[in-house]
Image (cartoon, rainbow over all chains, first blue to last red; front, side, top):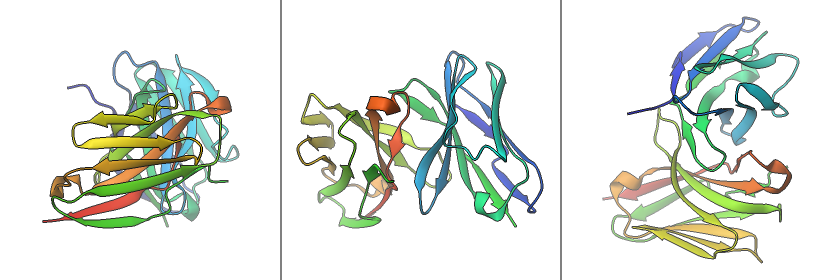
Length: 111
Length: 113
């Protein structure tokens, strides 16, 4: 039963701290997406990669967010420094444009 | 600039009745539309999709209707079941947003027994 995994599932941190979220895409999927869900904006695309290369990160605040794929089995999303407005659920998804499989999300709370 | 809008934050329906979830879009370049369903503490899961060359797609109890002239789509669930209670997201693809899904804000559906 292949699925996208994300760690941690929950993260509470103080403003100014670095946060790293990790995602393991489904084996064989060459496209990985990072989304953020908030009450006001719904699901927003932050960035996506194809064959480990970043294709679009226009949805990400560049000054504090960074996304990478060190290898085909790991995608990371970092926030440094974190701010209370970053509190949200962050989802990773893998698959194709037309068929995306989402992970369970990381619920981030920045106090 | 919300290109995909779900104007009803919530919908409550009796079990066995029809649930109709609505979605409007503004970008005429969108050519493929999807509905995702999300339970609490889980990621969204794909439900049903429709290409802009069609006006209807059916899969069991779920039917999606597309009205291109009105830039409107809807998801019908018949009959509704308590297990359908979830958040439903409408999403769109196409044009310069190739490769990127643009999501609506979601509608919380509650089906009462």
